[in-house]
Amino acid sequence: MIFETHAHYDDAKFDTDREMLLADLPQRGISPVINAGSSIATTKTTLSLAQEYPFLYAAVGVHPSDVDDLNEDTYAWLRQQTTLQKTVAVGEIGLDYYWDKEPEIQAKQRYWFVRQLALAQQADLPVIIHSRDAAEDTMKIMEKAYEDGIKGVIHCYSYSPEMAQEYVIGVGGVVTFKNARKLVQTVEEIPLSAIVLETDCPYMAPEPHRGTRNDSRNIPYVIEKIAKIKGISAEEVEETTRENAFALFSKVPR
Image (tube, rainbow, N blue to C red; front, side, top):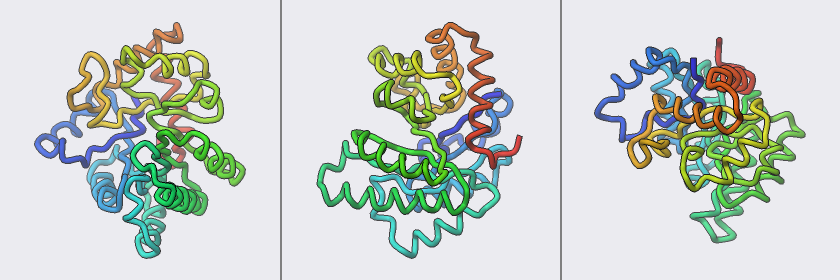
């Protein structure tokens, strides 16, 4: 069975066939699935999906590009959601300097990143981190977080192989792209014990479906690519990454 650690099945791109698609996933050997919130609104829809589907679990949090959603009231609401049985992580949270260049906006992102990390610590939950063009600040903040006992994964990892030694990383369809040399090198150099599988669907569909709507049924293409890079079997990749995910997201029942 494949453990999918990062999906967005509440996205409008799934409105036409969501029920049929989600019902099909366990039949295809894909379970459990973590659906990640990225705003207050999508955290609510994520929680609703988690209540509806036994194999689907929720990550609650606000993406750095949506931190305007956060104030003391919405933060208090998020804290309440971390206590729910089907909530297994805080995320996706982090820093994104690609879109937001202004120093005051970046400072606001850092503030709410740290505040949401505190939620994870209080609830004893791991974090799912979004980090784009913010490697140094992410590293500084996460060094302190790890000292405080907070575990996490950087999803859609895009930094150097050297920095990857410090994290668990989420690997998805990008690893199959022809221009993904840095990620391929990273996967080659880090141990398999530091990798979990993800799609970030409906985004980042792997080759040969690049540019189409992505879903968890495409993860075998990612498994095959990782197996080829590491010179091991696809079965070993599937089994090891599954165990890695259960170890990180320890609230998900086996």
